[in-house]
Amino acid sequence: MRFAPLDPARIHRLLVAAALVAALWGVRAELPAGFALHFLGAALMYLMFGAPLALAGMAVAAAIACALGGGWGSWPAMWLADGVVPVLCAFAAHRLIERYAPPNLFVYVFGAGFAGAGLSMIASLAVHRLLGDGVDAFLALGLLLGFGEAFLTGALVTLFVVYRHEWVCTFDDSRYLARR
Image (cartoon, rainbow, N blue to C red; front, top):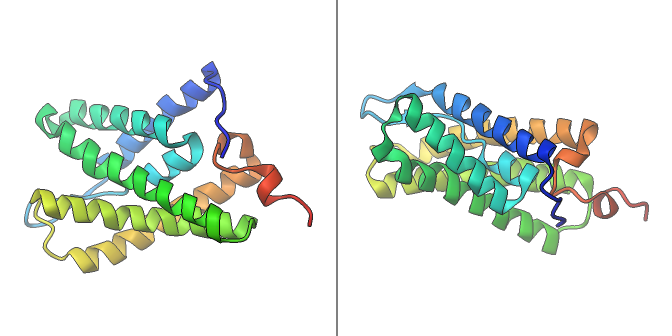
């Protein structure tokens, strides 16, 4: 994994991504128990910026979401369940893929992008359940939302790797595109 320097364009992309994640969180489905379902965007933030900047970006996204009506008291739980845990889950999936899977573009997209995002959504729902946020149908919601999160993240990672690979700091050209 490579760490790109913090240039103004990269910080700008991080802040725009945080605002887009907060907007994505605003598109939600309310359950009768009061729990709101939404896409996370955490795995994509990790793949684009790496773990430290993704955690910072998710903190900004949670702050924006709280400022727009979530209430500041919910910021720690929101950042933990929708930011920290999914980013760490995507990080773990990416590290496992780098260590045990062959260095292949499709392995990166489907493993780190698709599977990592799906697992991060399931982990987020597990944390929400542990926090008592009213997630009763955990298994069904985890599978449904995990697939949607995985599809959205996998599609965006594919587009970014093909057209703007310099935006994806976890993608290493020499590893995944080298001729063998």
